Structure formats: structure tokens, C-alpha cells
Length: 134
Image (cartoon, rainbow, N blue to C red; front, side, top):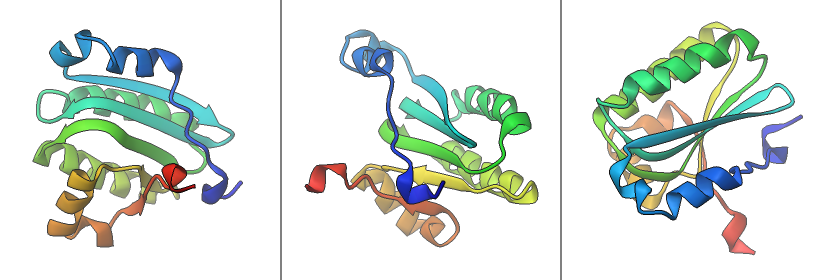
């Protein structure tokens, strides 16, 4: 299966959660699903120093079973701090060692801009969400 065949399906619970008032008080929700050998981690909320350990815990759960790419969907991320960016770079390196790739999917324009400013777009595989362009 190639990466261009991957369709990220955010589970309905996560979308419902994003549309509630609870969304405003909770910092980060993480949903992990699998599409064949590809793991898809959907992040919703704020990615910063206070949520980095939660992301690392999920990554450690995924790694033993990962045989291909890890797609990290940032489409519902409202804030990405330097610790979140560092997590992505470190996860990228960790996955490279085991022969896998980290793919950043659907970053918002603001987050894409951060990647460009920090030149992370030359390090990370970044795939925009083009589903609205039809």
C-alpha cells in the first residue's frame, strides 16, 4: 500500500469531542488507528510541553507493531509548540532507525508556516490535506 492510498478516517468520537465545550478545557486528545501496516495517530488540541509525555507514551505503544509509516494527523491541532516540534523530529529519527517513516498529515496553514520557518519541511515528510480541493 502506498502513502497516496492512505485515507485518514478520524473516528466520530474524536470529531464529536472537538465540537464540544470540553474541547476548550482539555489540552490534547490522541486517537490511534491502523490501516494495514500503517499507524495513524490523530492529534486534537494543543501539542506542547504538558502533552509531550502523552504523545511519547502512544509512540512507545505503536513502535513494536509498526512495520511501515506512522502518519501523524495535525488537522485538529490548535497549537504546536517547540516541544511538539521536537517530538516530531525525534520520532522521525527513531522511526528512521527501524526503517519506518514519520509522515505529518494535514497541518494547518499556521503549523505549515512554523515548519517552513524552522526548515522542518526539509526534514519531515509533510502531506497536505487536499480533500477539500474537489
